[in-house]
Image 1: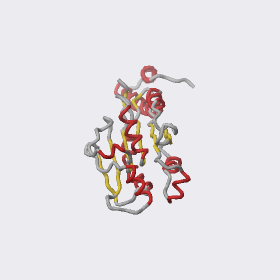
Image 2: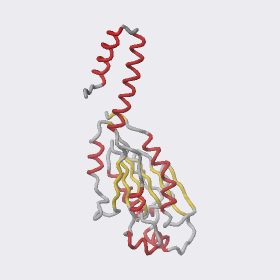
Image 3: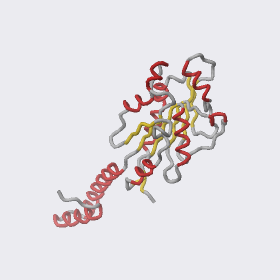
Image 4: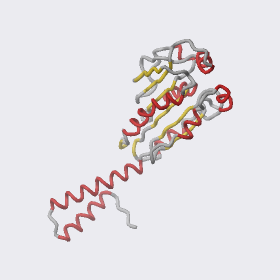
Length: 232
């Protein structure tokens, strides 16, 4: 099969249409339709949004003891749109949580600027915040934190770590004897953050990661829908 670049394709079409005696206006319209179609296909093939999930502190076995839904399971079960790459990581350095080379490599592997989305739960939210802060332009991601936990939570006005959007979803303030809530309070929750683009509070407990993730999905879809931009 013969493959054309977009400029050579337009030249080829012009010669064929001119040979057939079609009007110049008809030729221009046909070429525009073909180029827009081919350009859209090329863009879709070269843009591969990346979603990185960061799990919380407890491992899967301990989560089961607490009756808690493991964020790894949510990541593994999440089926992204075609062309979207996902990665499931731990919150810790041991679990690869603080690796950034693969993000930069992924961004450079496409000819167009591709959306990067970091989504972290509990201690994984704290890790995702650090990763977003460490990534310079032009890799700035969309950051979504689900009831993030970490010492930085003592500060309710943390600097926005990315030029992309920061959406933080957090749980109720009421005193709860739920085991997950007790552990989260010990680790210090972020709560409302004045510099986040969106603060969403829900009347759920720290264990309800399924509910929080369902609230996060529209923001994931929005970030993906932005599509790709040509790199400068």
